[in-house]
Image (tube, rainbow, N blue to C red; front, side):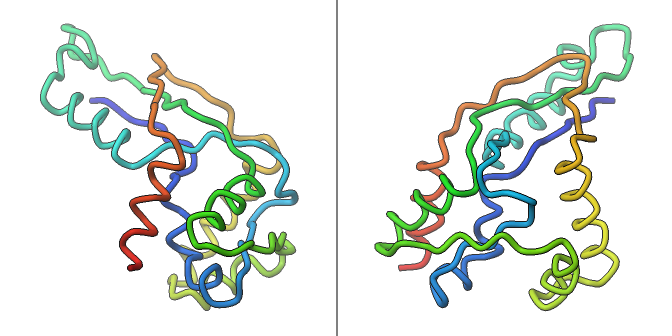
Length: 158
């Protein structure tokens, strides 16, 4: 068995795209928009998973033991994400750091079920408190740049 531990998805901007294209804001679910965090593209995650499925001996070793793969990759601040997304959209985006008490209601308003909204808010809070440390039996570096992902996302809007 291979478990893959992923950081933030670069594609998470899709969940707030209506705010970006409509109101011109980039909402941030963290105490600051200026702390960099690892963000990887889902295509890179998929490649790691596909490799683990097609090469189980190579992924977990010939003994059949399980392993945890920690994904690493480029780091960006939310302010940088907003700047790069704004360039793609042809407008400057205002970065809005949402207070913690608004995270769950905002997720629910966006269409998430309340239980998932609570779990997602707790995940963001755990990260902000430094509780989500990289761990795993091996590290895999994802290489897709944020600009490549944003180009694909914004091209779908046209």
